[in-house]
Length: 378
Image (cartoon, rainbow, N blue to C red):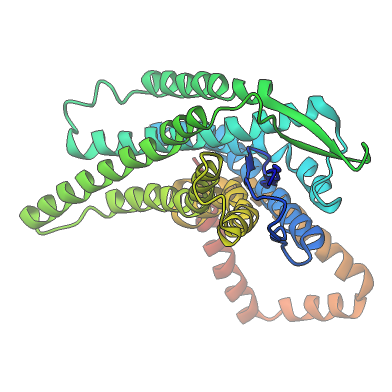
């Protein structure tokens, strides 16, 4: 019985995996209910949230904080890496809305796949640098002081960008457009003739599992050091705990987002090696797993600004300084509209302010606002 080759198209168009299911077997491809509606909506939400969040984060650090801390430099570059990916997300939305049919041409097919690869590689490498920085700062605070300067931090970020851009180059070569239904439907995918599953596995181990192992080792060493420190001193450094919590949350968000997708990518590689090719249920599980885990991986691009906004007081203050003029303008606009539309309320407000007790309360309230605003100054 002659074998035919079917392909699983994953959501970010990384790989195409031959399933090896024979013609005689009835194995219907896994389908995601209402995928042409749900996935475009999810991707649109990720695009809007991620673009606004990372744009605000970059503006806050660049214009207000001016990267006073080494950690801010890593955060700034991580946000830039997310923006690189988010620029291509509208192409994904269009493809999902048309049942994965690619309508943007070969050039954008290759560039979009390349940007996704660069984002994935640079994100995990920046997180590894952040974890190593925290490890050196806590485990070897004195010996690492000369290496933890802004100059070395900028150099590390430059190396990460160069490495990510080089690691993503094979995507430009292997990405292609394949047509079906006599050329009426086109798919942006990896060319199976130019991809080697052994090289794909090496990439997966090198760019995800090895960095994750380094991060876990760093945090285990940090946890051990902090436990010994707190046991001896019997007190806790609140500032250090907050800094560690932010980095830990960012790493956990990345791990939760990307681990399921990379596990299913590994299972897809097993299919290419012939493992489980005769099992229809295994093939459908891998296909459905890639489809459902890809939006979770993409959502990591909008999670970091939320974490920093909620848990990093320095970035919180910078964001408030950035948004304060906008909020003041909005407040003044609302007050102007209210005074124009409701003159009777303005008259009553004028009469109320003539009360001495009201004026005292207003002065006290104004003093509190002034004090709060002065605390936001850099």
